[in-house]
Length: 243
Image (cartoon, rainbow, N blue to C red; front, side):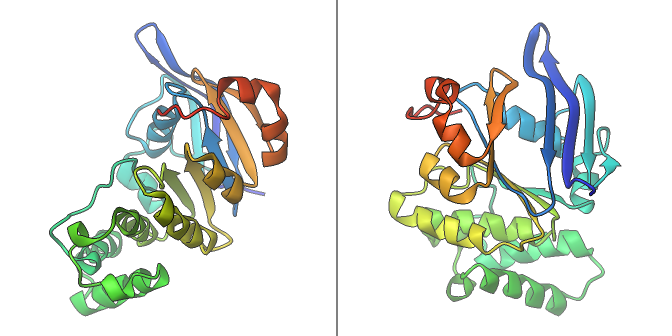
């Protein structure tokens, strides 16, 4: 079976500081995988290496079996990798539909007819339960729905691998269920890696969890095994640290 995403000996150093240390990571097609760790563990650095925002000091990255270690962010997106961000990256004055239409246009190309782009964008918006808000400016939405718009934009790229970087960050507790509901409805064949501090969300979402500490993998396993591991409890679980 070809893995959706794999890193082999992935490392990143800033001078003498190692922020990713020989990471061997595997994400299978259809995976529901969470990456957790305390403040400064290197989670966002790892995601930035996966997406091409950072170049590794050593190691390889394979996307659907293809070596993308030196590929640009745009090339990785074309090959099926999409992400959301800790802080949303939306156009607040534009409507929900226009935000998603722009993402569809970038994915399909500027020669695609505007009507076709709008129809595809509306289908994506509807899929995420945002049809009633399609013409609403993003800045007028509750923050939880803004996070859903970010996921809609990522889905507009038709990814095979979706990286969710703290999708519940800043979302009031009463709205976090919206995020999980949408994530649970993602296509079964899509591999999803969630980086998240909300342990309730992690344990409801994940079938497999990787714990990162100081740029290295501490342990991997099922949610049950991770919850029972004393090393994990010591460094992370039960804390409210962020990073």
